[in-house]
Length: 195
Image 1: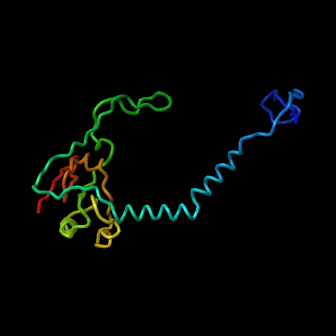
Image 2: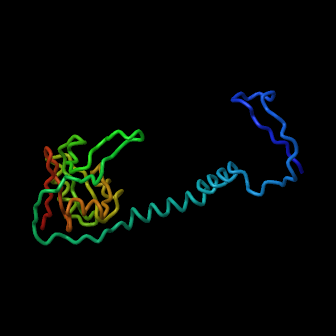
């Protein structure tokens, strides 16, 4: 098989602006598959019924068996959460303009503090649920589970229920539950509560 190579002389798209460079040796069929076909095939696989069922099964497993293995608080402990972070170097945009200089900042320099209480509990323990319910009477509460089923806790009257992560617990300094993190002004006060 042979091919004709065309060279465009200017930025126009018309055929009269091209030069026929003649035949340039033997050519072969392209061995690689069309990239569009590969993308479509991959998308069909990702969104296949089998994969949807597998994803639903994994999500159900994660929700029903969630447990970070955080112990129950044995003694009361209160502390201020450090809301600062450090930029090691300047952050610049694609044109080199400095967006933020290297240094130490408070997270509340960038976001508005919203007064609320985050309650960290083991959702499998009724005493923890009752503790969160009592707090809910006096403040806006977001429940964060260290263990338990998010959907079951939502059914108990908590519209905002989330799963904790080890990073979140570390950031707040929480080592035992139940615990609270209360945002007031530009400060966060955390507290582990022993029953």
